[in-house]
Amino acid sequence: MIKRKSAREIDFMRQAGRIAAGARNLAGSLVNVGATTKSIDKAIHDYIISQGAKPAFLGYRDYPASSCISVNEEVIHAIPSARRLVSGDIVSIDIGVVKCGYIGDCAATFVAGQATEEAKRLIRVTRECFYEALKKAKAGNRVSDISRAVQQHAEKNGYSVVREYTGHGVGSKIHEPPEVPNFVEVPRKKADPRLMSGMTIAIEPMINEGGAAIFVKEDDWTVTTADGKNSAHYENTILITEDEPEILTACED
Image (tube, rainbow, N blue to C red; front, side, top):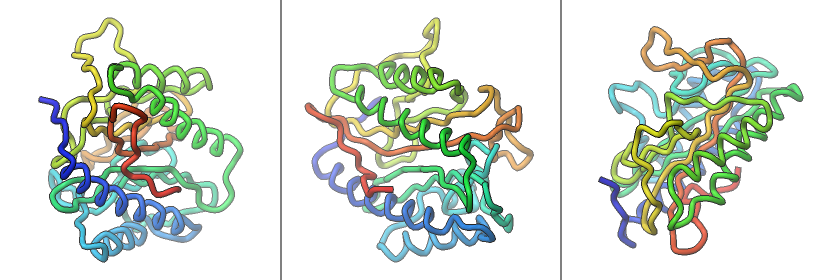
């Protein structure tokens, strides 16, 4: 069941969202040549704790870290490690924060050192996919309007969208109904809920430079592109209102 949030719940989500966005900004500043993904994760963890909150991902389904840090062909859910970043690596960082029992969830992709023009374009278009979708995130529209906006912008630019993983509702749990795919299913097999004010959802384009196919590595977490080409990720938690949507993870990145 899709839960519409009360004013009190929304205030808690704003608090969580601001902390998540602050952690994302911090993480981006640490994406440097020679840094390890584990050291970035530790800084994220320490920042979240310093703000009186908790990392939402740590221990979730036994996940062992406070963030997901995915490099180059890794799409999502890569576990931070001793891997050192080299110049040109593109680094997708996904962060969840719990504050007062409610969650803020956001992600962005950064570059260590010098980025290629191809990497810059992939990251830019992925972010644009989110903002194209945001235009459709209005009461009265349907989830598929968001999905269509992501898919059309990605494919217009020659990219593909990951289909096995989606955006989602978010609130007191990391994943709540509804699913928010980045593509329109034809023919549609699942429900296509109408957006209503008070709904809180995470829109998160996962865009591949090459084909859409992915696979999960032996750690049962890390998702990579099947063709080894780069992938980028951008996400914010948003609130549906009677007017324009509100980005709850709104600290600028």
